[in-house]
Image (cartoon, rainbow, N blue to C red; front, side, top):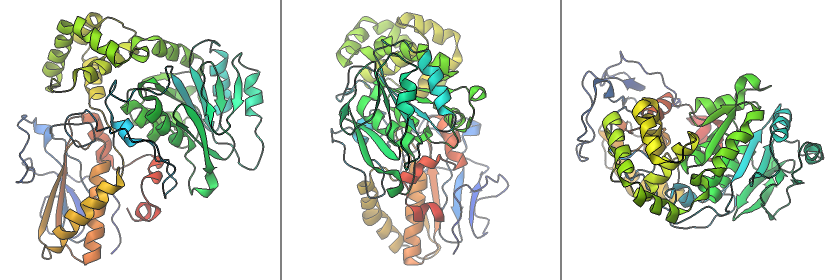
Length: 490
């Protein structure tokens, strides 16, 4: 049977249970309820919160619809508390698909948690492609030599020829410019340039070159480096996406945004090729949209703010001094967004608030409270930041394999043809987990040659993430997470 494409159209006229073969997105007249064995969220829903339901009557594959209903959680890791689950595992080499196996546990750990950034200064990853040299040169010319930051330039360079980029850029800045060698330590006030045709990662404060790109089956060097930078530097990571074609950098920037780093997109109108920065903006990951010459000032401001300089102990001490203002922030969030964040860990909350303060050039919490009272958009921006979206397709493959063998296979095996299976994915973020579950169920139904009635509900507190999830469209960077066969089929 031909596979249905996950980007199925949303058809409000299609009613659940209409008997038509194939996969349909249906908007029921009454909000569909979560599975009976899972208690529904007590938070009252607005009329627009009616979930979209995936109704499958004609057999595999299955497409999930992502519902706009509120459920506990919202950080994309499914635990409902937004605090991550870091256990301190070290990084590992590239996996079998050629994807850098970065420290997912470090990516999921709370801001200011037990796993601090590896280096005491901000490391800036700069991603570019066509037109990127001109943009980065403009950025370097506006960068003082003593910012205290390190800059790593990731560009698409032909593997078959020697690159003169380091020599060209060295004439545009007083900072030392070096072409990367494997194991090179990262130092402040230095510029590093990727070697042609290689994947560059950051591990334990050092730059690591992996096997040539052409041996890996895909070329996403910006995404790869950004993900590793997020794991290593967490809130002291910065991503800058300059001129280039395609969407390279968007998936990696999501990881940097999730751990509390800052993301900057070149103003598309100033880019020779605006596709890469435009993708970052459209995905909702850009904290700043600037011309290249204006980027250094924003980064200097970010690096100099207490958020990027303080450690967890400093944040906890400041929290004790600002308890009333902190309570006011939580009250404003609860009143304006109907979301109660009081159960989150206090240091994690404070660090996320500090991040927003840094982006708004504020150092006093009372000043930020006044901004929130006068600017509803800032309240929503803080709520979005607190809903930490650490997610991906088949994230933690061992857990997905256990789910397949221990739950999905017995579930499908025990169902008669046309019987139903209902699933609920909570804290679904931008939908990767819901689509991963649909793919697994589809594959197991093919394995047993069964046609089952499958409904997948997926909920999250973050409306912006749900908007991305409903489209079923993701950056090309997911080719490192999803096998080629699955990409072709789904």
